Image 1: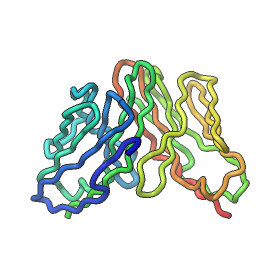
Image 2: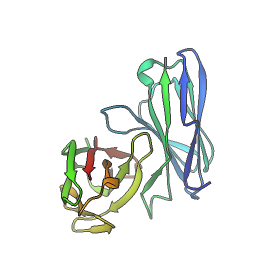
Image 3: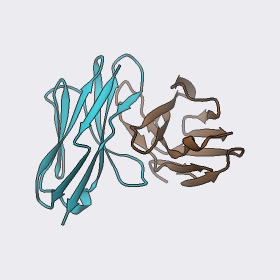
Length: 114
Length: 111
């Protein structure tokens, strides 16, 4: 595997379900991110982890719970979601940002909440 | 508040018809400006990073330029495979890794 991978690629869940999204980066980066992309809206940053520590939470509802066990893996735990949470969820990673600020994205998970 | 505005929202070109996409930004000290390409149902693919006014970068038919208020993505002699949504994002100085994105320009190149 190369770059940033995400699983599953598609997910359909009911409002009472609990599910998790997984992201893995194979680039040796130190920072990882979750973004949400809804139709007709710009990408919205949700969470930032740097060296496994959460450094930003962009006012995300508590029904989204991130987990970063190490610098290569990032999870987004989902519970009691609403239909308006349906979107493309994108993971990204970047190197030590003092030398290169570029973020590289995974293919995304298309989430549908019924 | 940091903002990014991209224009036009959509652009249709004939194959070989050169044009430019615009990204206007306001940011409290620019750390970097980024261009990405996104195909339907896929994640953004990195194209360029620009750090200072006057900087230019090229890749195949694409050339990105940067001024203190805006960036342009010039597309020379486009091909149908250049059809995609092009996203612009800025990152402010001050320690945050946050990228602020524009809504994108959807480019369609007809054969």
